[in-house]
Image 1 (cartoon, rainbow, N blue to C red):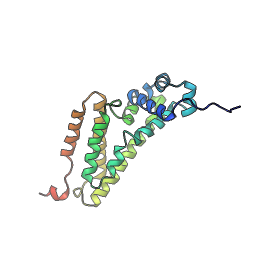
Image 2: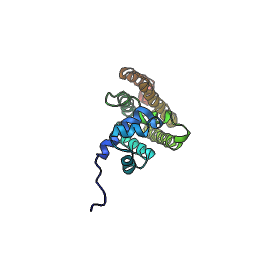
Image 3: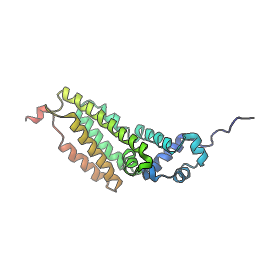
Length: 202
């Protein structure tokens, strides 16, 4: 006799559906009933496959970072700092206004409505955003060392500024701002970006 029945659903597809729910409703706004209904599975199946709601959210967040949020790491790998910033801003604008998923950013949306009961999730999202800002700072430090940014540029300040722009674009998109309008924010940020040293002195 078999020791247990195989799962009757596609775990990866179910995780994709859970991601959409969390993205749309935030962590606390997404109830277990919302999740199981959208995923097409029972509560026991959800717990058996994913642990609990918190673990399901963490798995969905990982999937988001590797999928819709993947532009961030792609941008960091660009060969010059202008390309890094352009890719990050424009791809973010497109990602937070994509027609195939909820508007905004899961990492931002998930934390905005977290209360005391979801403190661990809130702290994880804060830590992930801090890691992203640290990655930016290190990339800017490299650009300064390689002479791509004006002497005296502050990598930490630039990373904080760009992070704030990206998060603000996500909040704007979640509130209904169109892609065209969000891309204008990206364009404005690029117009204020420090020029390379050779152009700054022209």
